[in-house]
Every structure is written in structure tokens, then in C-alpha cells.
Length: 385
Image 1: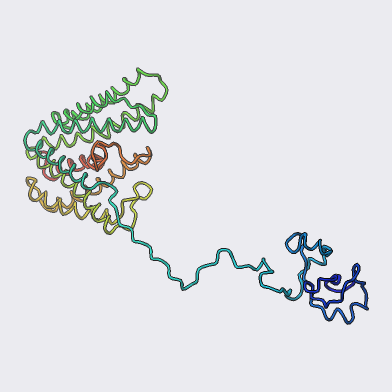
Image 2 (image 1 turned 120 degrees about the horizontal axis):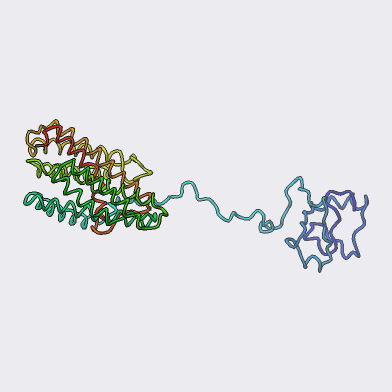
């Protein structure tokens, strides 16, 4: 091999490929040396680098007798662009497979998404109105009937809660002592007041401990702990509604309690759905917003002022403002508390008994923790009368 930059000269019949002048048939490779390099090398174009492999020749090059060139010298990058007869000869510079869009190309505008309530509103409203009629009718006709309504709601709520605990966590809280003790707790609160409610709560917890002893000891502590929690969370808190009913204006007190809780939930939903942007507790309940909480407080305070002024004996509007504020706080905390339970269980609703609402426990979530708050504030404001 000579000292020229591009290697051996082309063979005969390959002048068009290598760019050399035609010189007729030549046997073998052309001789190397100054005699060849002096005048004739100046007439040739720079020879392209021939890579190893079939990309530039393959069998066709072998048929024509062209030697395959290899070695470090032929893999070096030439100092100037290599000439090609056609643009298609350089596949490495082909057009990109995924060209980026032009900067000024019009992009389709995203379609605005409509907000959804997440539930069947028509069914929810229908069921809510039906429940309201039953509650109001029993409340103002015969008080004992309303106590029975509370007891039934407590038993169904306990069944939903214990069922979900067993399905999702394998916790077997004994339902029979809970149901019997829960109903007795509500009646004791109505008949004997707070003292009767506490005694019934203690006896129910004891019944849960004893009832669970009839089964194997595995998971005993877990089961009885869940049972005592269920007894406190559902029937004991509901007992304060029955205790409200014992006052002379007890029906109006219970109605005030129900109205303020419903108005608080409605205000939170309406304002949060329309203006909600800042999450209140995203890890617990992603749908609740700070704007919704402000709506709950505003609606409940206005409703509280009206209820205390016109429904409660000896009540004043400013007491209603405080009562509404307390109801909004307790209802929101109660809703978040049950959301925490449902997230731990990995469920959306506690049940399917009420179309558009879920289960009974999904309606009691804000009522249960609000009942002792309203009972206590009404006793402080206007007495237990």
C-alpha cells in the first residue's frame, strides 16, 4: 500500500464508482509508487471510506473483483465531506423518523371537562326526601316512634360496619351483643338520660368481651377492640339524639340538630363543587376543599341563627351563630373520620341500602359526632328543660 491518504487506486471498470479516469482493462492491482501518485492522483476525486459489512456492496462488489478494505486507516473520518452521486447514498443522514411538529402548527384545544357529582343526584334527592318525611312524621307525632327509628338506624349501621370489617380486614366484631346493646343504649338514654346511656355502654362492652370468648383465642384482642369501638362510635353517640328528645321542646331541638347538619353538608357540597380549588385533606378525602368548608360554616351559621331565634325556646341569634359554627366543624370532622375508616378498608361506601347515598353509615357519618355537640351547647344555652 502506498502513502496516499485514501489507499489503493480503483480497478478497471470502476471509474464511475471511484471517480478515476478510465484507462482500459488492467490485470491485477495498479502499481503503487511516485509514478502513479504524481499526475494521475490529481485527476481523481477523494475516495470514500468503504465500511466493513454489506451496507456498501456485498456480493456485487465481490463479483466485480473489488477488494474489501479494512483497517484503522479506512475507518478514520475524512477531513472534508465525502462526495456522493445521489442524496439517497447516505442512509445515516435520512430524514428523522419522528420529526417534531412545526412551532406554529395549530394544536387542538382540550375539551373542558364537566364537573360531576359522582352520584345519582335524582336518586339521592328522592331518598333524602323520603327519609326526611319519615323522620319528621315520627318526630312530631309520637316521640317513642322516633326512638325506634334511631334504634333501627343504629342496628343497621352496626351491621354495615361489622360486615365491612370482616370482609376487608378479617376482624370479627360480635354483631349480636352489639345490636342488642346498641338498641338498649338508645332506649336507656331516652328513659334515664346520660346516666342510663353510660351504664348501657359499659354493659354492652362487657357483653362483647364475654361473647367473643366462645370462639378460639386467636385475634381475640383485635376483635373485642373493634367491638368496643363500634359500640361507642354508633349507638353511644346516637344516644345523645334520644336525650335531646326528652326536653319540653325536644322535637324542635332534634329538628334543629338535623337541619344544621344537613345545611352544613349542603353548603360544603354546593360551594366546594362550584368554587373549590384548594384541597382540605387530600390524603383522606380528595373531594373536600377549603372553600367547601367555608361554605359549610357560612350556611350553618345562618341556619343556626334562624333556628335558635324561631325554633328553640329562649334561644337567641348569636347563640345560633356559635351553634352553627360548632356543627360545621363537628360535621366536617365526622365526615373525615369515616372517610379515614373507608380508606383504611379500601371501600367507597359502607353499604348499598340507600340509592344515591350508599349505606346507613354513609348518612350517619356527620350526624353521629354532631349529636353530643348540639346536645351539650343547647343545655348550656337554654338548659335541659
